[in-house]
Image 1 (cartoon, rainbow, N blue to C red):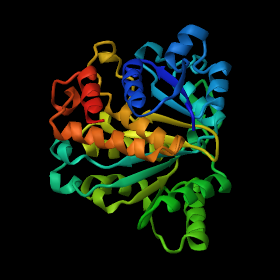
Image 2 (spheres, rainbow, N blue to C red):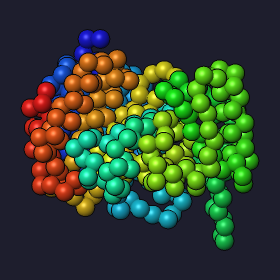
Image 3 (cartoon, rainbow, N blue to C red):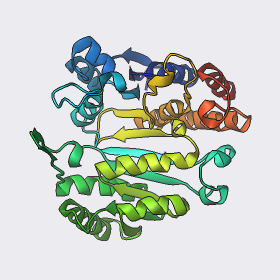
Length: 342
């Protein structure tokens, strides 16, 4: 692919800094055509909405999308009619039909002691968390009245089938399907459909069902048990951040949001960190690793993706530590360390 097109959505807070660092790394492994647009709080300030039609159109026509982060206290509000930065991200997922979020969780050997858990608990962790991204309570009907509010959680058989197939296809040995089937009707539907897809299409992969509270506990006491975790939108949002902390810092985890076709959206797992925005000290490694996922899943550039991941690992082995990892390296120093590895 000659000069693939990448839409850059730096977003809010530290987003512009970490996206700029990732562009430097991308430019070291290939030639790309970039187009930058606004999303989130900065888009609210400029256009009155978190996601404009222009940004949607640009993303649809791109080969891949790299996003920094959105949100911040500036735009926090309990007014149900006020625009929120997160609406930009949810809108992109819906408009582009990005129904699957993939978050690999594998601690780097040099960071095992940075984890809040003991080394012997986390050192065998190598899992993929697959989160359904366009259904459930986040996309259900919402209503607010004096004295009460409601959010609808709704899933169709087709939505569960397609995320289950993706999870089983990615598994090496086992898929752990997480639900709340003991109290939620959507959980019972989820368990039934995942079980049927397993029996009819992937009988060679082990399947286990876990309730979300049990899965949350097992992530802390035996994370090495998991191969692929598949779950619905709300549970996936919570469990993926819990799993991310196993690595020692949320600043180390990349993610990929994919659909059946069209461009994927790639972003770090962390937030916009407005308290350190503009200070040049943000950890860019999660975004750089998200750029590697962009190359692998978005542009089919496996060698280049692997080179970036190896360069990050080598930089950490040489002692690179940003503030969130207990060191003092700033954004520029971390970027230079990865570039030196390339």
